[in-house]
Image (tube, rainbow, N blue to C red; front, side, top):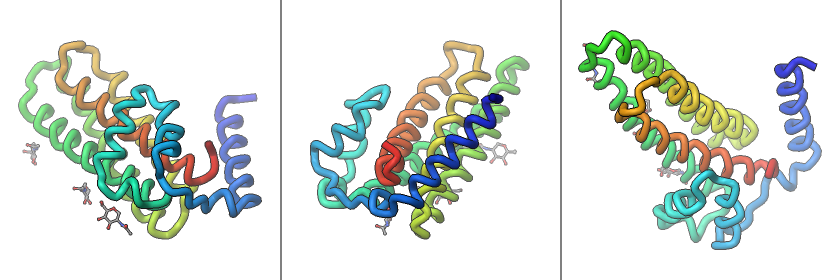
Amino acid sequence: MAPSICASLLLSLMLAILLICPASARLTLKADEGVLHDICSPHRDPPFCLKALKSDPRTITIDLVGLTNISIHLADVAANKTFAFIGSLVNKTSDPKLKPQYEFCHQFYESLVGDIESAKDAWKGGDYFTVVVAADSCLTSTGDCRDVITTNASPLLRENKEVSYYCEIFLLVSKRLSGLS
Ligand SMILES: *[C@@H]1O[C@H](CO)[C@@H](O)[C@H](O)[C@H]1NC(C)=O
Ligand SMILES: *[C@@H]1O[C@H](CO)[C@@H](O)[C@H](O)[C@H]1NC(C)=O
Ligand SMILES: *[C@@H]1O[C@H](CO)[C@@H](O)[C@H](O)[C@H]1NC(C)=O
């Protein structure tokens, strides 16, 4: 089977599970310490994940719906900051090899920022499946940006990695909310 068919089958399956199990789609566990550890354990940097979620004082008192909003907000702040940073890199870089790489990253971030905006709307509408899809694109765009940067010394690599960590938190929290993990 072609990979894209597998991917769409997988998405359909996840959607079917959501439709069949409305209860699990509306989990409202309190985001207590145990839940936070569970959510963060598959993260590439679990302490980073825990620290980020706990940086918001609302985290310990809200449910998974609210925690997803927080994870969207964390990704939003980091993504906007890095998007602006890439804009300034594009403007001040004259290196003919680096400039196009930054321009590619700028495009990837334009779509990443758009994904986060669509996640906000979907979250408001209670469409948590679309939120998961947006979180997945968020993570993918940071990977795309990393892949086009060939200079290990670029300051963008560190910033982009941080955004990818926030996108991963956003994905883990929203999957948990949707009952997908
Ligand atoms: C979602 O998070 C944003 C950013 O922190 C906040 O301004 C907003 O009030 C939150 N929405 C709800 C309904 O809690
Ligand atoms: C991030 O940028 C988007 C698009 O420009 C904007 O709508 C959103 O309010 C910004 N978010 C934050 C937290 O500044
Ligand atoms: C980069 O330059 C363009 C065109 O001059 C300008 O519109 C944009 O605001 C600049 N971006 C940054 C981040 O300085």
